[in-house]
Amino acid sequence: MTLSFESFNEQNLDPIYQVEISAQSHPMSNKVMLSCLGKRYFNSAIYCDGQLAGFYIGEFVLDESSLIEICIAPAFQGKGLGRQLMQHYIEHAQQKGAMSCWLEVRESNTAARKLYQALDYNEVDCRVNYYPTATGHEDAIIMCLYVM
Image 1 (cartoon, one colour):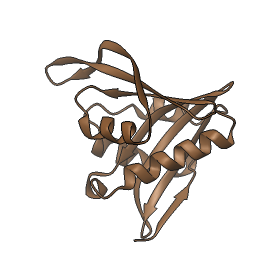
Image 2 (cartoon, helix red, strand yellow):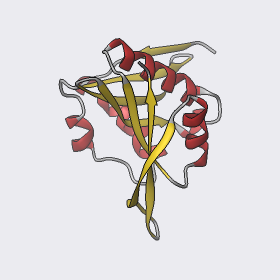
Image 3 (spheres, helix red, strand yellow):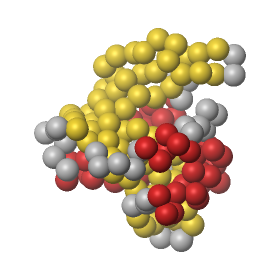
Image 4 (cartoon, one colour):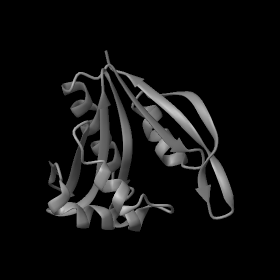
């Protein structure tokens, strides 16, 4: 399996957005995704043997980075690509000067939470009823990695 990472922009956003809508129960809108291509944002797509497998979008402000979105296409889930993508995000944030990396995750997303904990993220807070679900709302768990 050959992996590669490439940043994306408005010109090659369509396939990225297709991954978003295929993998998320409540995907961000195309308009919101476009707004995440501005100056303070950075991103990368991961390709597995030349096929788009996923992406992340990060934000950098002062000395902090926030993971805005990370997504692995359903056909590529369970192959360790989320870990590869997260490690790429953390390295990219550190290169920009981040001293901490923040994210929020659905409380029900136990696989993602285990991955983040394995990468030394710590749970620091909770946003009650933050994410919509098919039957109501669920909490967002806020996590942080200090990378000083």
